[in-house]
Image 1: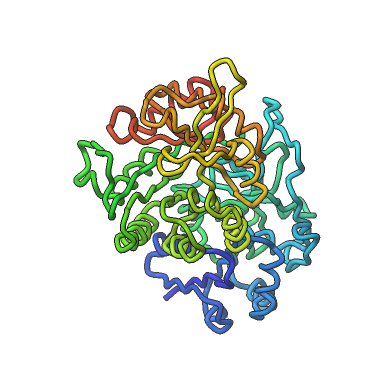
Image 2 (image 1 turned 90 degrees about the vertical axis):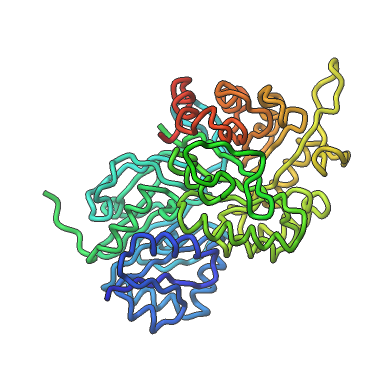
Length: 219
Length: 257
């Protein structure tokens, strides 16, 4: 029977994501765990997170989950969510600068102050909070049955900038364009919260639950 | 196209039951918060806010179960306010599946609570609810003060300064209710909404006074609110959330349809 591990390292509340994954998982088992052996045993791994990156990296390290994430990232389908996406990059400028996992080359930056809407000139609030459109910049099995430009729920003040444009999978506009989704081989990560994004979010989770980690070549 | 303005229905819950008479004809039990939340989710609500007005602490545990049940079926953000006084109250609600908590009286009683909450759980889940009342005379520049206990108790705190301070302390969002307009159905206090929205960097949810769909448009266009919260116009089945969104879209407001 298929199994999905949701990594529990004390960063925020995993109830929502566990419930949403269970909702779409069918027969698959869902484990919320910090135990390396449990996570290794799972067919797929979800790496969520909310809060500050320094605490996130410190907790991962304390629990030995940073090395484990690098290990499972070699072959298992892995879905990073929100802070779990940012942690996949090389470095974040939050908390005065924090080294991250380096699984996707690039930086995490803060939305600059004084950001305005490019069309209307209206001042934009930080955090970027609410429902915004995700433009699918590359075909991917995780976008299956999700209309391009669907709205997802976001709440964040920092955003990822992948160094290699080939790793960009989705783009969102908020005063500037930022990476709403990144992908590299068996890794996929989103800045938004699919577990809070109603139909589109549940579809993305359902797609992940079925994903074998392969990305078919473009036609 | 960018970030959508949010419409947030608010449910008052007393001992696990929706109060203030939700009147949907089509649902089986209009007092069941789970059924009502499911209905709002289907209509396209962008978030749902539960205000726990339970007086006794015994019954407060009921709210935890309500949140658990709703979070298992409704996959949009959930906010819980009412009775959030200590860090364990927040942990309990987040563990039950709430995404944010709204802190009101406890912030006035001890502002440091907001800082501790934001440090512990992150600003993204800390909403500070502000109940403000106009205290200036007609011929004076407008000024609002914070009131507690349903608008009965003055605190002497200036609403704009208070909002700024709460954001400094880590509030990720402000839920702003005009006590003058609440329940009147005469529309938001737009001057208040705009003043607070322009004063802080975080999103502001306008609340208090919505009586028709134009009021929702005014809240975001004139009040510059990032989200609008309403109760009775949705509860009584006068308008669906979907109708409200179509009305806002027709007025040029970006919404999630």
